[in-house]
Image (cartoon, rainbow, N blue to C red; front, side):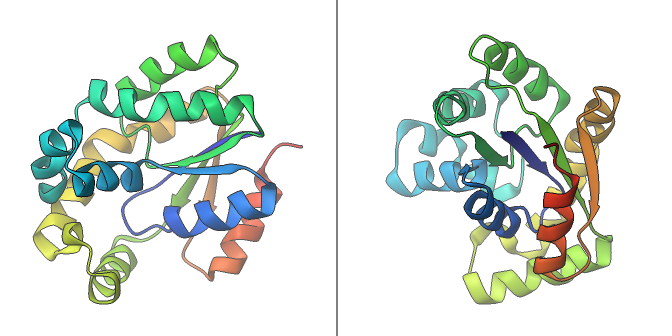
Length: 187
């Protein structure tokens, strides 16, 4: 099974990605973690996208596709994947679909984690205190939420029109959210 996990910053994509990958036996691919690793390692890609990420801006489509899609294709060929944080725009989704169709790596389901805005801010600022993520300061968070609204939120309708979308109320305990996602996935 191949599953995309989308939602605004702070909606629980990372938490649910890890839980679901373990529970369903899928490889968890987190686009944000892959990008942060590139920045930390000082790779050419990391040097190119580091400032964009610190501001909360989207990484150019060609760069993120180049990083993520080979891993998606490999995971799909194995036991399947649970991908969070990609795609972040309809354009990325369309480009990824073209690449995925050739290798049977297209998503079987798309999970949208829906959380009220005030709860997102609370979660992200709490995470900043505990994890110390550079992209979790208040100015960057507001920009990331704006970017989500402008670029990523249209994905919800994009995947709904294709019959792949399952909206999950993620404003509850992690266990309840995990159970709701598993119940929503196709057999």
